Length: 461
Image (cartoon, one colour):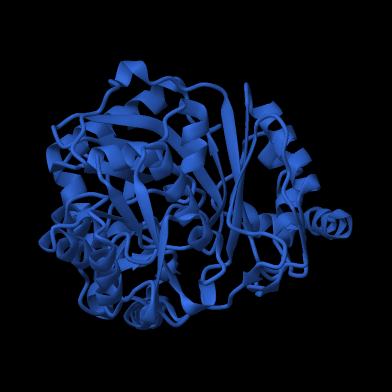
């Protein structure tokens, strides 16, 4: 096994990696910006190295600084977590060239799946169903309009190198294509330094379902069922759960087996998540693939009992998968709420110092967080403060447990989206499992939803 792992990340995911390494008997190295000197991942790692000032490009995205930290501490592997450099194929390649194991898929796989156009092509060749769309990059608005007319409106323009909702525009009529193309392409250039666009048919009321894949270096692939990720705002996930209320056992099995066969065909290794859109008629279509551990991975851990971080590290070392598909059971139900430091109404980030902090607990409650009293929420990084997960024998109990836990969570000194979660989880449609990716939009637009949110804000400690 690895002797020492450097974690090229911060916050709760860095802590999660440290915990997995400690249980495996592996020493850890934390890297941090000057602003994160007092962060918990720095305190709990065996060693820590400052790699630069707060802006990400000068620290957590600074590849030479991270590799230098690995060199001076003699780390033999690097775990990238999620975000930052986790899906940077060049970084993974440089790690391998420096004889440092990158804990994740092969650089060639990251590069293939990181470009949405090439990923669609690979998915099609591997047998995954696709929405009708452009066969590749559309070069200009005129070409985009021609493809859109062919497949029919509405369509969605997407950045080929994109993610997180940036460089995406929905277009409902031919006259709007040119402006949407220019705007989305400019956003893509600003976010990814790549303005290439493609388009596909837009599904009006889709559900967002993802399948967790685990693959070893010896060709064995299994799936760990699905996660429902339809509660999102501007393509940013807010609530995830497993099992999905939308999937029958037959559909769950079909999606899992299709995913396994596809990953075997492309030679995938380590952890990965295949994201699908499920349309109103129950048909599923490949959307993209994330070649890293997901923010919402605890949901899967709770319902399968599989430690995904531990597994990820073991796979990177070359160990074979111990379990076959028949050994993996779906037990109970789990829900995750992302607790963000942001206004619960406008969703504007809300940095500042936490003056009082008390996390919920009790049976079936898990909190993954790096927050504490007097913790400074910095404006330089993502607003994710914690992940609150509940687990129970069924969805109804897991949901009630989450409502109870949200009512116990105390975070003072800043604003958080806890009131939003309390309002969302008391919504009749959500409680009945009848929701799609426009759930948040409808909740905030309705008078009943607005009343619930105001009441939640008043009642949140």
